[in-house]
Amino acid sequence: MKVLFSIVLVVALNAGCAGLGTVGSHGAVAYAPSTQDWRLRWRVIDPQRAKQLVLEDCPATDCRVVLEFGPGQCGTLALGRQGGLGVGLGDTPAAAEAAALAECQRTGTDCRVASAECNR
Image (cartoon, rainbow, N blue to C red; front, side):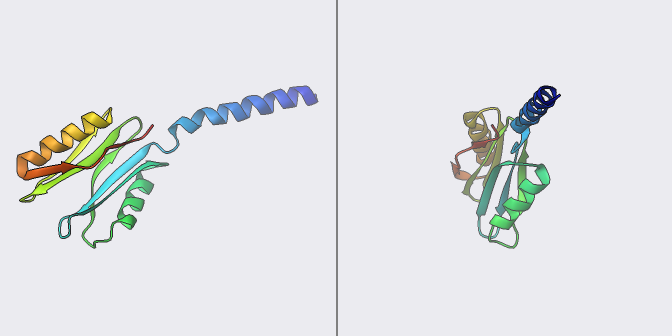
């Protein structure tokens, strides 16, 4: 009976570990237009918590979430002159950065991209 209990316990624990791949699989980007402050959070346990943490990190009162990204996704933002702001989402950091830069260049100049972070 002890052996059977031990086997069941080991199987149950291993099954629980299989779910760890989804833990920390959400992210968010917050941006404040008044100060151009921004914050990026990734690998957070759930989307609501990611939004909450990124807003807590942002020092300006007008910070708002401008991007949410989920499991297996990368996210970032680009800021430029003349109101340029772009957010980027992609399967790789390069794809997210390219998307953010392209969006920023549609509305501003001299855009600079923050390094993308991924939920992996």
